[in-house]
Image 1 (cartoon, rainbow, N blue to C red):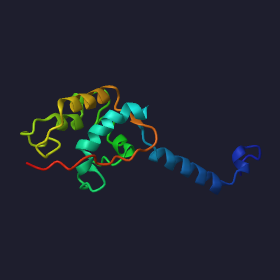
Image 2: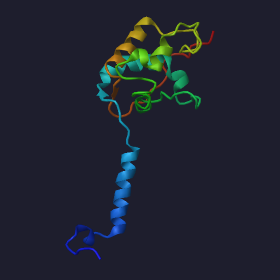
Image 3: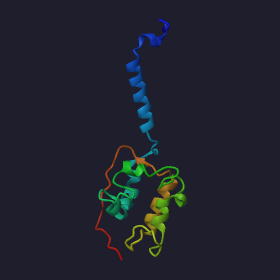
Amino acid sequence: MANPTSLLYFVPMKPLFFVLLVVAFMAACSTTQPPAADAAAFEPVRTVLETNCVHCHGKNHFKEMPAITSTRALAGLIGPGKWIVPGKPEQSRFFQVVTFPDEVWGAMPPTGHAISKSEARVLRAWILAGAKVPAGNLTLSPRGELPRSR
């Protein structure tokens, strides 16, 4: 029998178990998000993504393709060992494929219309600065016409 002066003696076990289960579940579901960026500072990156990436990686993307539908989805691609490694553009698969020449298999976008050098500089600077996305969740929508394949 429990000691009557013990705290657990006065707390019914089922509610305590439920609270501990909820806390454990919340801890398991939490993910580390990159630090938030100012929305205005993110705007040049957003423009590059919406002009060059979201046409194919948006809401109608194939399941094998990483989704870039929102800043929340983008944040899920950021981190050590992920598509975008904060502070390390050359180690980021995302940056590698968008800077491949059109002739290289796997170059993105795969339309024969590589991103411009100025757009590559925007993405490189963003990744070097930590690949921060704005707090909250911004929807990313395609801008302009879908570039045609070669």
